[in-house]
Length: 289
Length: 328
Image 1 (cartoon, helix red, strand yellow):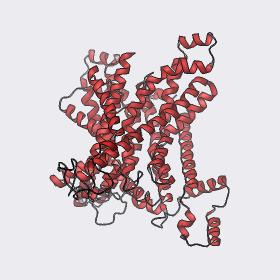
Image 2 (cartoon, chains in turn orange, green; image 1 turned 90 degrees about the horizontal axis):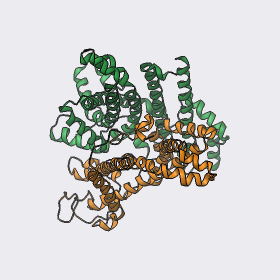
Image 3 (cartoon, helix red, strand yellow; image 1 turned 45 degrees about the vertical axis):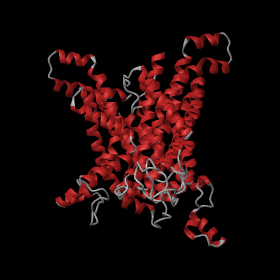
Image 4 (cartoon, helix red, strand yellow; image 1 turned 90 degrees about the vertical axis):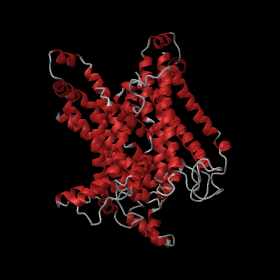
């Protein structure tokens, strides 16, 4: 089973992925994966790369982009926008990776247990998963984050609580189809213990599908996090954060457009690269099989 | 069909109960203390104990959950910490504007989705450009699209207003388009429609692409099916092929995606309303978050969540009507 065969899963992984692929050549796909690596490096070294302190006012107020000292300009109290954006990219990117990782871990655990056990445990776990899948995820995440107190950690907890069911379904489906393969039957007949059976003979086959699902999902999480940060469920002022920085500077749009727009464009680029890169990974892995 | 309906209704009720349970648990573990919020920090311990008893906060958890459900059934969602009014009153003020925005946005999304799907499946030339633009726009955060729309259509071209609903009078239903039309007030209707365009289009883009992609792939599958080739081979005009043999077969997946996306719009509207100062429930939610107004947040989640669950249940029934094979 691939992700796109399942009508419920297609709902999530259907922005760039899910169709017949971009039809791009292998070298273009490697370049797109390279972009993913580049963004991750940018996020890792954001603090080294940013020219100024993102929190201290250091320049003229509202300097436009292209100013000699401030490539992307400054905000209303003279903070360097390039530095704030770089720090914001770091927060957004790692937060998105953390959410996807938590989804993979929780969902993967439930999916493997359900898929390997079968029978009553399988149907109970999948009923539970489907129940969560049918809840309005974003709204529940907002409610969780807002009731625990508005900050980034609680937002990540809120999203993680609603994010795993997709992965549980993907992993469970893959485990079930692998368990029916001859090599697993052979291993069972040879008297291999369940631990070795799961970790040697089933899990390695699940990994490629899980990686594709996760990489196609990063763009979704980047957008969701930016939206939640925009409505106040992110880090508090003065910490730099992409969605919140736009929301705080909304009233400057018609006078100094760059102050709210620059962080928004950073979100667009992150989401675009994540989607194209995820699709490239899918195409490359599909070609290898 | 009756069995299918009953089963779907049962599932929706279970989901609603789960949603209320989640909200109830959040309310109990939420650090904000409702008693302090009512009485202020200087209240005496005796007053606090009395208020706790009055609010039923000293009862056991299952009892409190049942009471919470009973209140809910009576339309009692508590008092907002911020506005000091019953949350239900607040909601009835803000819900109509959101309903109007989401309904119009959904219509736009469906039209764009059909264009998107047809441009891919039938390979029309001009719509290819539209498809590329829509794909790019669906990758952008909605608030960036909103800002771009304001700069272009309000500041540069001066074609469209950038904030509010366009009403200077109070409207009986809160849905300006409907009110002005019923009164025959075309000026007001035009103003209301103008104010709706930007927020509705911004809200519609991501769902349009999601629905369009699903429609497109189901169109692709249907158009290459054997019975379509037969219909064409026997000389049926293309339009008749589309209408009689393609439409009903291809609409199912689009329908289910449409329902899901309508649900997502109830969450997406929070961001869009904030940018456009739209006087709806999303703006109300965004104002409640910084002051930790939990009754308001819980109520908005419950109401929008109930819509989401209801819409998805209706869509499942519609799908079973369009394709009786699902009705098993």
